[in-house]
Amino acid sequence: MEIDLQCSRCRLSETRIQVVPPSGDLRSPVAFVGEGPGEKEDQKGMPFIGRAGKMLDRLLREEGLARERIMITNTVKCRPPENRRPLPDETCACFPYLEQELVDKLLIVAMGRTACENLLGRAVKVGQEANTMASVQLMGREKTVLLTYHPSACLYNLKAREGLQASIRLVRERFF
Ligand code: SF4
Image 1 (cartoon, rainbow, N blue to C red):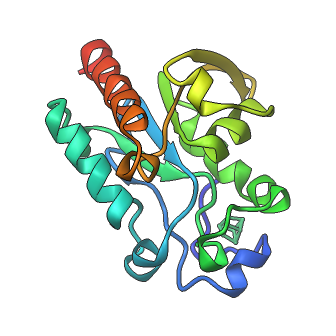
Image 2 (image 1 turned 90 degrees about the vertical axis):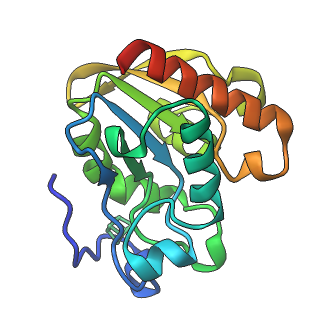
């Protein structure tokens, strides 16, 4: 389903400023998926431009992977109030957009628990499963998901930072 910038499929439409669509190279073989837009993203209409985005930029730069070469998106396209986790009915309502964005990708990098659990459909302990691969079915096609940490966890957790860095390295070595 193509993203509707006026979408009102869930209650997040009542509190957002705007829908935040994917950014970067939409035709990239690799997509990085986060949780949802924060305050800055909601204001500017771009994913990962706040503190977590700056951390992601830094790790990408350190690993020599240009942000413009990957697609970056979120599980939900509208900011949850007070940056709370999206609720199951909200992730469910937004899933057709995500599925469409990811259906042609060779690798999906799920960053953080929300993205991992939404794509895998089961509970995930990122600390135990980071940098493992899983297969999922999207629109009848088998897709590979790399589980990893969310950049916001890397702001205060060295293990998370090293984990996400290792994921980015793997992406660069295999795809770019
Ligand atoms: S979060 Fe997704 S489903 Fe909900 S209103 Fe925004 S675009 Fe629509």
